Image (tube, rainbow, N blue to C red; front, side):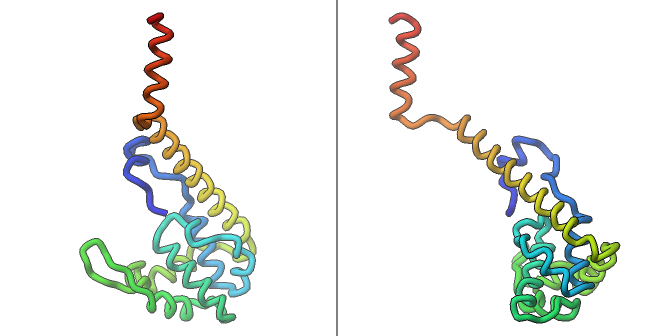
Length: 166
């Protein structure tokens, strides 16, 4: 879920909450141990903050849905079959845009143990829920500062007139 410009303008340059190590650990766990994905099926690709991590998890879910193991080769193959258009107009596969085999290897290297994949996934989910709350708060803030509809303005003017005594 991309961040809107008003969010960045409202809160400044701070990054939204996410834990890149937990994201990599979830992905790495699923790549090392194909049974690990069954422990994190409560996650959605949108729960991952980094786009390339969303692509990787989407590819894992696709591989898993075919009842195939989420090995590095099968996930890379799946990522290679999806296209992404860069801002400069060039089209790359998800795999190439993410960094190729090096990206997949990096995910694996960030996983200390697949035993704890559920805990890593809980962190990813928690960060996603926090981002959602911030998005909702941002929307409410924008609505609070937005001009009121014409129908409401008449009531406001009337209330102010009554309070002034005239």
